Length: 472
Image (cartoon, rainbow, N blue to C red; front, side):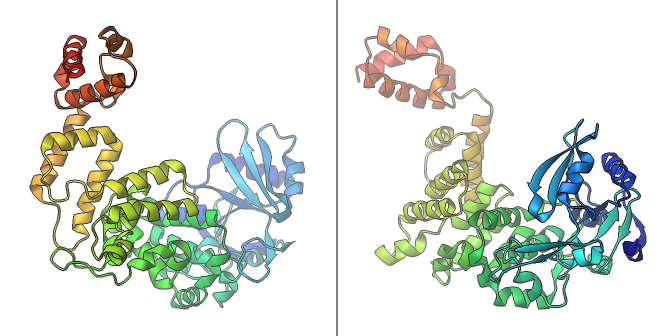
């Protein structure tokens, strides 16, 4: 077979179900290969991940071969491009199959090929892929690795290079490859070939043609790139998510993702409290928060309202209000889920609460309790990162201790974290002669009291308190 010349002496471990599927192909005289991330990761000692497979058959030919199988079934993905999913009937495992092929694209980096040609030589298939380290193949029956582009050298050097000598050949076919370049480099802790980086920067405007859903999917992966392969010993020690965001900024990609951030560029802050301008402060806060999508987005956007506030009023006072509107608009445009948008809105709106640490403990306790444990925890994490991101030291210890004590009290579980947790209901209040809107008002007062005094959350005490509040 023509592909044997690309065979190496290196083997990887294979899932048993894949070996069984390779036997099905072998019975029809076909060799089945794994390609891409699974092979790359196996060589790096990273386990798991999706398994992409390929062979010299069209999707329809694979369907015909599999349709009467006792072990596998197929689901159409994009048969025009030779893509079909092969599922194991007895487990949740599946494999994404795409025929070995060459692609042709129209101008503009719009991603989808306008024509495909099926091939049998894996090198021709490899040249349509983006980066050399993703163009490694392995025999799905034996595990032997095939390296048509001599990519193993790039892999062990930790280099992101295009499969073609001219990086532009890859970028022009799909502008999203610019973000993918950043994401893969950050996830693996790899370097980017200077020629590739230069072409990406020159042609970053190709991102304007990319569907917003694809942009957001890659952005999320970059935002959480530091936890993708936690066990991997990365060459580059800069936090991956921070490195990724800085690359997006330096490449000019932010203009096509979150252009509103650029309003913060050069926006000066009071040197008494801040080392950085607004934009670099946002980047540093984003760097400091834990790897939770809503927190990272909040870190990146929490002060986005400062330029607008200063423009209108000359100060940053009230910037959180402006920030909520701007952050909401950005995330809605990027088509984030409502739950994500709502949480970021909340964190941006509330991040200034108790800024100077002078809010009494019981007020902080009630405030956090009403937010809910998860949101309250994220808010504290954001506030801590906000202080670190000023470049002037961390959160004042007394304020931090106060907030941590309040959260610990909430976590104990004896505080009613919802008005519905009160040991009294509307019917009980009606028996006291309380009706209509007064029921809601009294219950709010009772909840506020029991947050501070959880031991009073019993029916007898609440009835006594309700009588008192009724007459107040």
